[in-house]
Length: 294
Image (cartoon, rainbow, N blue to C red):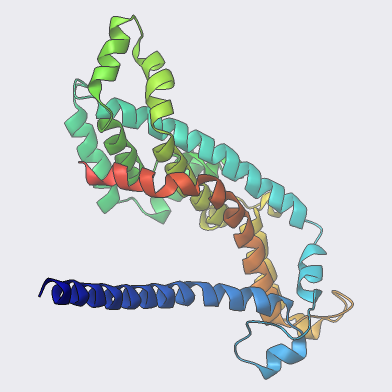
């Protein structure tokens, strides 16, 4: 009887594992295949794009789309601008978010409940695009890279996650440091920050992706085309690529507009894909610890 029960449990466990793995593989493929299609189409020839609706492995490699994009004189300047905005913006955002989250995580802070209420209020309600534009213009930030950083320096959702992470750190560590004569700033730098690397790395990735992918604010606040980040420039390339067939003088071999669009997606995505492995080991731990305790 016991052997029969164990055999039944074993078979049910195997069936569950098979179903579980099957579902996970299907979900993974549904996420991976579209990107493979984008990557393959960016290298496909004009004839293959016209003949096939879905490409995973191009029969012949063509670099025409990338030659066209990289032939744009301002492409490398825009890449440098985007990298600079992402690096500086992420540093500013994570610094301000960590400092504010640490203060709000301390129960002895006077008025912390009111401040937390206003932070939660901004998640539900925001001024919108027009008030934001008026505010940036009135502050004299038009045609300034700070217009892309300051208005979105602190994200309320990221702030709450980091605040919850700080609250999970035992208060006894802070009390012991104060007994040794350390002030709040020393405690934050030498105790809280080293213990919070998973949360800091996770939130930094959130901010970096946000800064890298943002192009709406650049369109609104940067009227000088020489200051455009890569996302805005690639958007212009995609728009202009629709009329490439009528302008054969742009490049020697005119690639199809679809391959140019796919190539722009690849160029805009690869930097974030390269950055992700460095914080991947912190990602799950940092996100979960900061979200399970309120």
